[in-house]
Length: 331
Image (cartoon, rainbow, N blue to C red; front, side, top):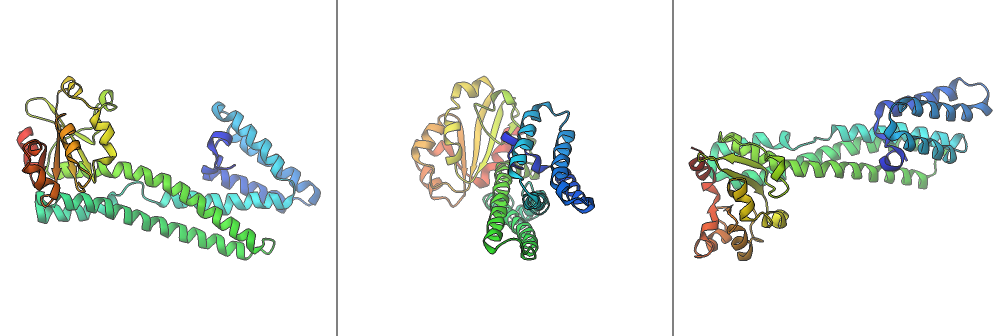
């Protein structure tokens, strides 16, 4: 209920609100002499904190009212209220703080290492850099995730072990629910990093070799999905896409017909691909005919095969030529 945005407004993501709720409810329990009034006062405080906090949020008004009404039904006694307070303090707040501590992108784990490879290997290190960017970023962020969940999980486990009113089975339920919610939230953040990581490595490579680039104008982003655009010396555009495989964008790029490319003065789409085993002759022929060029690792079997094929050789190039070809187009 605290995390459900569509039904209840997602109030559980607001750390200040959770702290205010839990503190208010605990103060009432501590300061009230009449034990029969405590629960009634706590419910009233819960209602007042929520309505005051969202008094001006008209879009959430109905959802907050529903949350208050459903909490009224769920919290029937002082033990239910204690569960609610524990959830705010020891489940939601630790998860929120842990998620905030997880990096939103991979740059911290990748840039220094990627720069080292390019400094030593130059343009021949591109395939290694793209793979490392992906692998190191994932490992670094997963390590950060694990550090946060172990810390928060251990704190909750110790707290529950000191609470005599909770059975071992109930502790297991709380701990597994905590882990489920953490993984759900961490997974959402992971998806966001994956989408940004590929654009990050494209930007890094172009910046390293001092090739000016920009994002695509939104009016044709729906037709042609690439990471960066480079303007050539004759005024046309080249789209750049760094991918481990072409499979992820197979349908999008195949829909970008030559007429669309001509309309927006797009000369080529350059794909930098590090794992190319799924790059069939059919894909190369179809996409190559639509001005797509594939830069494959210099040792690639697909590159060796296509380079000797009369109908495919114009669509594939060694990755070590990627920057050289871009420079020839730009200057």
